[in-house]
Length: 232
View 1 (spheres, helix red, strand yellow):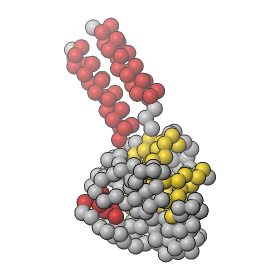
View 2 (view 1 turned 30 degrees about the vertical axis):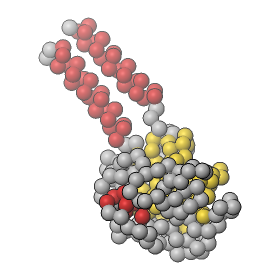
View 3 (view 1 turned 90 degrees about the vertical axis):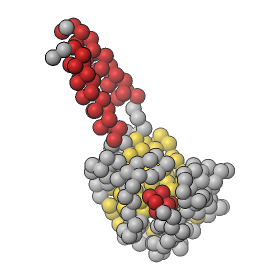
């Protein structure tokens, strides 16, 4: 085997490993009653293999286990969804064609009394961002006990716009989270009170790339090249 072919095969294997790490970097969940699963790719972080998860009544969460990564392989991450107080989950908003329209417009958590409770467990990413998709204006959010406030609107359902306390959008992004468990409480109240209807359409958990991992792979490529040259 000549030096060029040997190096090409070795580097190819290393970058295949890197691609594998990248392919399992997103978990996407469509909050849906089961009738309209997403079959394509969508999201502010464009991804496929969307999981379908339904809400349960207060005190009776519905758990979806072993959520899929974006490459279709199973994770150990689970999600439980329920109303925070009495209320009936479900309901439809305007439906637009395509995966984006289905995710943003199809299923709402139509809770009459105190928003939604989202519990995610066994997250394996060491650090991650969470994207939460909405269909309401000024949705109040509590993430792991920390109050957040976002002025959000459903937009037109055909694109993704990040919301802020002053700019309308259809999703909010919570950055730099860590830990294997995550609790999100949502409600609709412009006064900061956690009461009202928490209209939420879906969520994505996106791993934050670790520079050390990519630096290690780059170092391995360099070391491989040196070793091949020495053998030659």
